[in-house]
Amino acid sequence: SSEGEVEDLGSRAVVAEQSRELSAAACEPEACEDEALHAFLSAAGPVAEAILGRPSLRAAFEEQPPRLAADAVEGCSKEERVQVLSLFAAWAAVTGEPPRAMILEEMTLELPEVEELAGTLQTCGAQLEEWDMTRCPANDATT
Image (cartoon, rainbow, N blue to C red; front, side, top):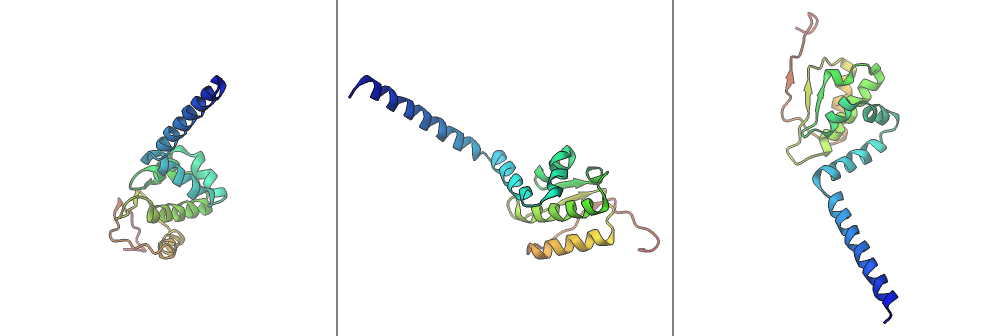
């Protein structure tokens, strides 16, 4: 065996070791979660850009359990807001370890949003065992 072949084998061994290290790093829980979120949102279409483009929305999806506050959806159109809530519920239904949960804070939901949330949870086969909303305002028509 020549010196060039030994050097080449050594280089391949170093590259193989670096690949194993990168693979191990890619499987860190945080990295895998981020990768899973990107894959999930890539199937969501244009609303994914709104989620990824707003740090507060993206952070809501990244938290465990997912936590969405009213200020994160401020500035969304009604249609975007319904889509974000639907995706948020779907993400909560499939991410993390059981029992899965989602947290909505300071949210005032309109009927179409509640219907979309219920439909999404039903489609995902998810059940809410507990519904906890902080400060759920009511108006005269609902009391």
